[in-house]
Amino acid sequence: MLLIEADGKSLFRQIGIPVPDGVVVETETPLPALPGDGPWVVKAQVPVGGRGKVGGVAVCRTRQEVADAVRRMIGQSIRGHVVRACLIERAVQGVESYVSLVVDAAEGAIRVMYSGDGGIEIEQAARQGGLMSVSCEADIGSVRGGIAGLAGTMTPAAAAVFLYEVNRQRGRA
Image 1 (tube, rainbow, N blue to C red):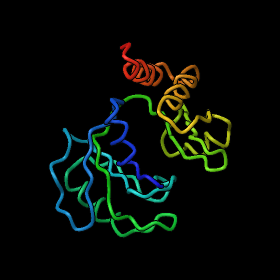
Image 2 (tube, rainbow, N blue to C red):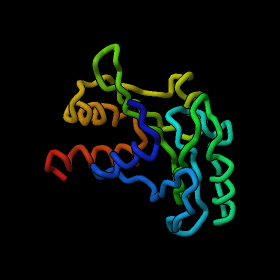
Image 3 (tube, rainbow, N blue to C red):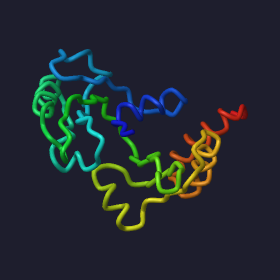
């Protein structure tokens, strides 16, 4: 199963991990109310990385810029995937990190990956050894344990969020 970013963030939100406020706009849907005041980030929703390097991510300061970015992205092909939806989020300030949970079919497990560097250069961070990962059994308890195990490699803010969630789920927060 391939999840788009909006689906992954929805799952994070359901278990209490904070993510930026956002709305999803699909093909031929009117632009909804935007979250908060601008600027906003418009992100093409396709199940591949590298969107920012090929025009699939745009920072917009006005509602018109958002509408233009959505119109430009919808229907575009990114690495063989047609963009059918865009995620529009309120831009946030701070340090961007990367977290991913991936099905590792070869090991029959879940691979939790983390980097203190996020954004469009995540593939570069991975090539340079800046992507930490751990393989976990395919159950929520093991995944939480994997996240907790990676906490020592995380930025203090990311570790605080993930450790809080691990403890909250165990009834200790």
